[in-house]
Image (cartoon, rainbow, N blue to C red; front, top):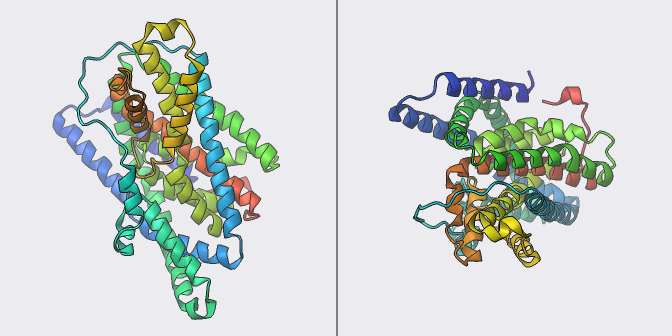
Length: 413
C-alpha cells in the first residue's frame, strides 16, 4: 500500500475521533497532548543521526566529483526565488481579495515573541562541535559540522577511505531506520489529525477566520496545481510535472496536520529519493537546506495576515488601497526575516507575523493578538507550502545537476 494512502487512512480516523469521540475533559486533552508529543519525538528520533552521516557522505561525493558549488548555487537560487515568489503571490492575493475585518481585541500582550538572531549565530559554532549533533530543533549546526567533515575527507581519499566507508554504511543504516519510522508514522497521524481537528473546531465556530483559511487554501492549490507545475515544465522541460505533486502528497499531508518542519523532513527525503529518483548525494543536502532556509510559506501566510490586521485596525484601509510603500515594506521584511526562521520547527508563520507587527510599530505592535487563536492552523498552511517547495525545489536542483533517475509512477512509494 502506498505511504500516502496509509497517511490518509490515519487522518480520516483521527478526524472521525474528533467528530464522534472528542476528549470530554481536561484529562483527556492532556493525554492527547502527551500522545502528540510522543509521536513528534518518535518521528524526529533518528533525524539528527541520519542527517549527520548522510550529509557528510554526500558532501564527500560532491566535492570528489567537483559538483559541490554547482549544487549549492542551484539550491540557494531556488530557495531565494521560491521565497520571493510566494511572498509576491500572498501579497497580491491579500490586496485583491478584501477579507472581512477582525474585531479589535482587548487582550494584553504577554511574553512578546522575538527572533534572537545572535543566539542563532552563536549556535552555528558551539564551543564543542559534538554539541551540534544533539540539536533537534535547529538543524543548521549539524549540517555545517557534517558538511565540513565530508568535504575534508575528500582532501586525501587514501587516508580517509575507512572513515568514508564507515559513514556511508551508517548513513544507510540510519536511512533504513528512518524508513521504518516513516511507515509507523501513519498510525501517529491519527493523533496529529485529531489534535488538528480540535484546533480547527475551536476557531471555526466564530466564522471570523474562515475567509482567511479559504484564501490560504485557494493559494495553496493554485501554487500546487498551476504555479509549480508551470515552473517545472519550463525550467526542467518536464512533460509530466504533476509527478512531483503526486510524490509530494504524503509530505504535504504530514506537514499540514503536524505543522512541524522537522517532523516532515524524513518523509520528504524518502520520497525525494525513492519516488522522484533524486540521487542521495543531492537529496541529502537540498532537503535539509530547504527545511532551514526555504520558509516562503511562512512569509506568504504572515504577509497575508499582516494585511488583514492593517485593514482591521484602520477604516482607511477598508476604503482605500494600501500605500505602495507599505506593500514594499511588507514584502521586503517578510522575505528577509523568513531566512532567519530556521531555528524554529513549528509556529514560524505566527512568529514572523508578530515580528512584522512589532517592527511596523505605529500602534500595531499587538496586532498579532487578533490571530493568536489561529496560530496552529496558520502554521499548518505555512509548513504545507514549505514542504511542497522543498519537494519541487529539490527536484529542480536534481535535474539541473543531472542527479535524477526518473522513476515510473507505479514505482512511487
